[in-house]
Length: 231
Image (tube, rainbow, N blue to C red; front, side, top):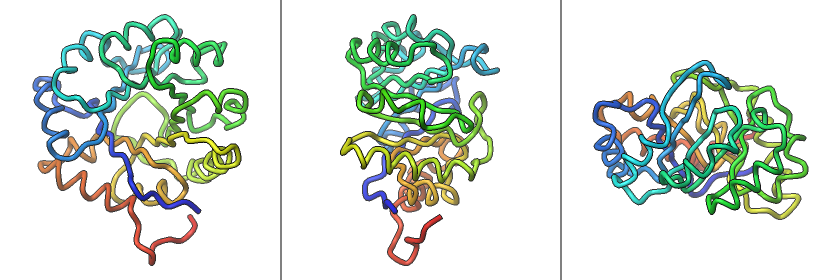
């Protein structure tokens, strides 16, 4: 069992007020956000449509925090350079969205960004077998991608544990990120299983006190000894 000691909280701007996006980014950083999570959707790979490089470029000046870009798009290789140039520090693509995962990983690496690969809830971990050593981050979706505000899928928790075991067995330093339904009542299960990066949208932007929301999420991932039980 793995207990997170320094959880990374990454607010997803998908849940922010887009009319005041620049300020919203500043506000969550002032409230204690570690990373800013950018959910890019193309209405093809997922049913929703969000934003592209111009929006990321427009808010890049709001903070020097890591911009964590999650590409939920088809043919991601074509867009890696555009998102990197817009200000993305870390770029995550879906294994399900590319025919040549290793090549796509190399495209991201060559851009100078940190490399992430995401798996949908139903996708098995074995697709990472021959690229895991090349990654900085694995994002396990704890909802089906496409929309914010969904409920945490509990059956992904054993998958987090299995991924943590894979990473440890190889002696790697790879972040395990979870995204979907993360809130104070669910973050503990993901943390106990081995996740250390937590994406939260409505759990932060849907509140009136961002600092309190981030503090509660961080506390939920930093479990005391009495709470350290296997999920």
